[in-house]
Length: 357
Ligand code: AMP
Image 1 (cartoon, rainbow, N blue to C red):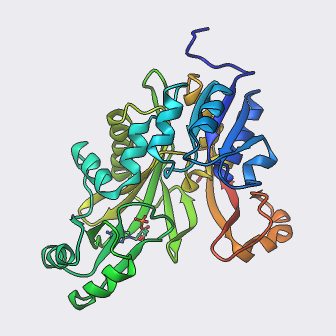
Image 2 (image 1 turned 30 degrees about the vertical axis):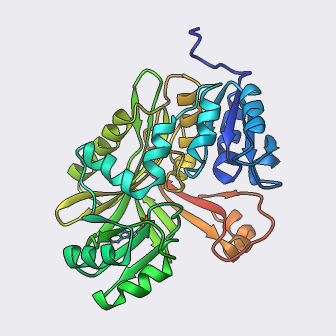
């Protein structure tokens, strides 16, 4: 067995202890691999199923000790500060690497990276002042969307601009944070590709899923996506290009708009992804196991889809329907162990599975 391969009995470290870390830990445990998460808050969801270390992102000694206690480190959310990731990477393999974090944390960097990889993104401009915003609106027109460069997720840090007269209000609404303005893409549907790249450069892509968002939060993912076969191929090829350009190891989520002119890449998430949860019940090897395999240097698994699936997120009070959902034929319930069902909080999901059409 090569030195690069971390077999059963190894320990994975995960930066972040939310549901993505939890489901990764569960998949690792099935392969006899241990998991330890590093998380600033107390009692994270992943801490119910694996070791959890509480520590801040600026605590160099705690980060170093964490790295020393595991064999390989990954992350389950893309806002891990690059400085923290670099402390880890100096001591243990960090997969995916810090380059992927850099590209995904900042919307301007992300767009430059994607354009450099030859992919199409929405028309955009950098915005650092109200004057920049007015100039960007003059160039890109309305409707357009102002997005903070950093810390945007689930539709947060975004303002839609319907008319140039709304510029000052939009700039105030994002608290004058460095931003990008994006031209509105008249998309028909939103899709995503979950893809994995192993240590040797092999790539496995899952079938693209079609996503529906409500109030900026993912509501459902449906596979197969109702798109022509040619677009499915384009989407998978786009994901492969991104993985190679980042010399990536692990699972990535790539969100795309299906526009009249073809595919437009919306954003990348250098981690397992909510729109890939259907793979847990629709594929022999799901995205979580695939990520574990990739970062441990294993051969990637079979990502072929064996069922049609609809994944529904259970948000806030939706989780109170757990007993009813658990009784549904063909439904597979996944709950994250979060005590309080706050509005907008992802509490779990359900995969509804049917024979492949
Ligand atoms: P994001 O956080 O960038 O993924 O944006 C959240 C949601 O807003 C997306 O899933 C789309 O539904 C919508 N959206 C974002 N950017 C654009 C755009 N340039 N054109 C049209 N819709 C967009």
